[in-house]
Length: 114
Length: 111
Image 1 (cartoon, rainbow over the protein chains, first blue to last red):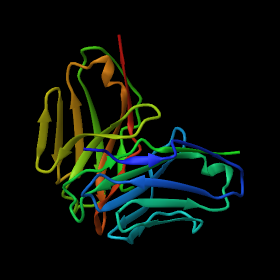
Image 2: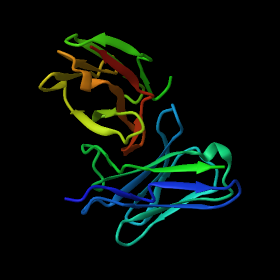
Image 3: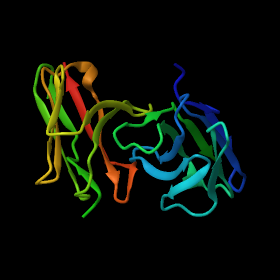
């Protein structure tokens, strides 16, 4: 069974540009979660999508947005990039509407803003 | 009170030692809890689930105390490969499926 896949692995952008990160969940998983992890810090919750809808959003500015497609894959967009957006962006998936199942994470996209 | 708090660490222990980490949570309605391990610059990986009073898997034992709202992770006979950051995970209030990750406790097992 294929795990959660994220692309690209690494991304280098200039301040002010836009970044698009992609995630494909495990087959059969309908929920996708995005987390940001800056170097040396903990995981900060960004967004949760399920069945194509945004279910919850973390304490991030509106320039962080995303969507989920009919095949349950997801995209995270970060507009007007700032230097402090440099971080590891992790995507996770889980089956729908169950808290008894932990997340499975992808290996992440490392975004560097210069 | 923060949603999830963990022992700040780091814990530096010799091989073969027994080490325990604690985690406290604020959402009294939480039903499911997890421990993840994260190696440096890698993604977190699920280590153990804790649904009832506890769970044991080989050298690892997780215990849950609902009355006091804390979870513990015990590692026996520590191996060098156990060196990692251990993350305590609890459900977010009103969003049971949406989890909150603790800040992590770093463990270094020394030869």
